[in-house]
Amino acid sequence: METHLNKVFDILYITIGTFGVAIIVWGVVLTLYRLLRLEFSRLEHKSIYREREKVRHKFATYLLLALEFLIAADIIATVIHPTFEEIAILASIVVIRTVISYFLEKEISKFNEFA
View (cartoon, one colour):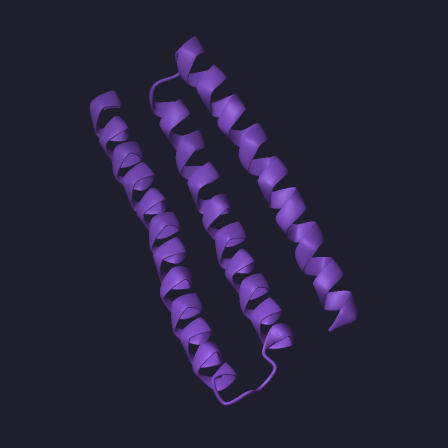
């Protein structure tokens, strides 16, 4: 029974982590596409500063969402292998990702106030 449960958690860990990575890749693809379009419009002597900031903040929202998925995957991994070392690694990863998420969210909300 415990072996089957570990397999289920392993599958969940891989699936959720894969979603997190897929969200990052999707955000990168969309951001690159939008940036290329903006750069071509800049060649026509149009100002793109505001639009570039919007694209940058949109990418930050993809990163925030992906970070949440990756944190969830790390928590599941720690449930599967609850050694002290794994818990310490998880704690440090969660702290780092939480700080990054906080500052990204703060920057996004500041941008939305001005938009």
